[in-house]
Each structure stands twice: as structure tokens, then as C-alpha cells.
Image (cartoon, rainbow, N blue to C red; front, side, top):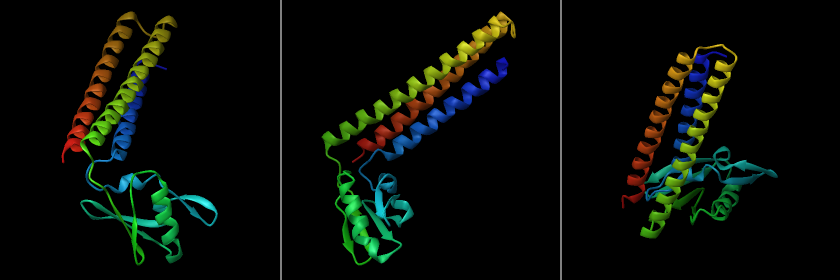
Length: 186
């Protein structure tokens, strides 16, 4: 492993942490309907727990309603029950072969809880990024100990890894501000 490898690996892992945060934030419910909130709903399909998106087409009907259209007629009741039992605070209703899932408007108290959740997710991402920095710095120290790089190279690489860390943390903060604004918008 070289100094360049250590920096590259750290940068890739930090980007992965940011992508994970983006995915986690996408699941946080806002006042608007979002198909992502049904991503983790599991449906009993021929005796196997199956992801809802594999047995039904999930679309947005309007700003506050999600439409779920099972691929098979006999799955309508099963899918509706799975959504109701998923503990998402949603109350689906069936109209023919289409299941309409209205998303209730968030109360002020619930919005504040969502903001706390967003901040908690962000803090987890920052911790992950700092751990990546620590691991990268340890591998640089190991390279120095093995005389694979000079002290100057190690110091320079540590500074660059710190810059990568600062950039990643700034990105996390930016994502949090955007999501907070989205959650608090009525």
C-alpha cells in the first residue's frame, strides 16, 4: 500500500458514507408522499417474505397519495395488509385493483421528531467519516514505520486526508440543512 492508495481508499469510503446517508435521509418522511417510504415493506408472496416493489407497481398519484398496483389481482388484500402492518402510520384503502395510500400531514411535534432523526443520522455519518480518517492515518503511520514513505509525505498525506474529512463533513451538514428545510416545510 502506498500513500496515494491510503488517500484514495479513504476518499472512496467517505463518499460511500455520504451515499448511505443520502439513502437513509430519503426514507425520512416529509409532509409529501414519497414512494421510498414503502421500500422496506415486506409482503407474504407464495410463502416467502418479498419486497413490496417486487410484487406491485408503486407510483405517486398526487402530492399526498401513493398508488400501489399489485401485479396479481389476488395480492391486493395481502399488499394492503402488509402496508397497514408495516407500522408506518399509513392507512391504505383499496379501490378496485389499486391501493391508495394517503400520507397524513405531519404534526409540528412529529416534524421536530423527524428533524431529530435527521440530525442523528447525520451524526452517525460524521462518526463513520471520522473513523475512516482515523483508519487512514493509522495506515499512514504504518507506512512511515515500515519506511515506505518519508515523514514529510506522511504529514502531507495526513493534511490531505483531513481536507477530505472536512469536505465530507461539510457535505453531510449541507444534506442535513436541505432535509430539515424539507421536513419543516408545511
